[in-house]
Image (cartoon, rainbow, N blue to C red; front, side):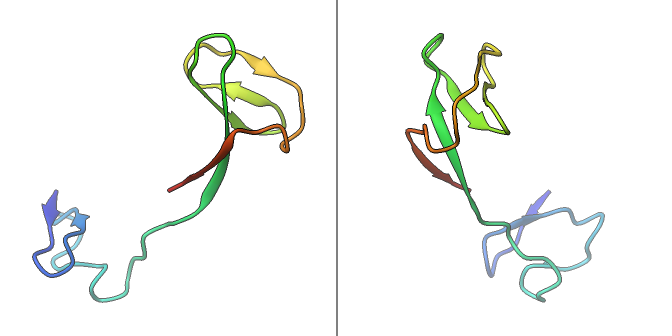
Length: 73
């Protein structure tokens, strides 16, 4: 992996001979995702038709509106 000196983004030089972000061939993905604090272990739960904890596997079957906030990525 290599960091571009112009835009400070990381890319794979074996796959690209130049920065694909500076040339517009790749774009960074940005989005938002709801999260919920897990009552079982304190970890983070993500919504995918049910709330699922990535730490302990706890599932909660409430709606997407039952969240603690939004994570931007």
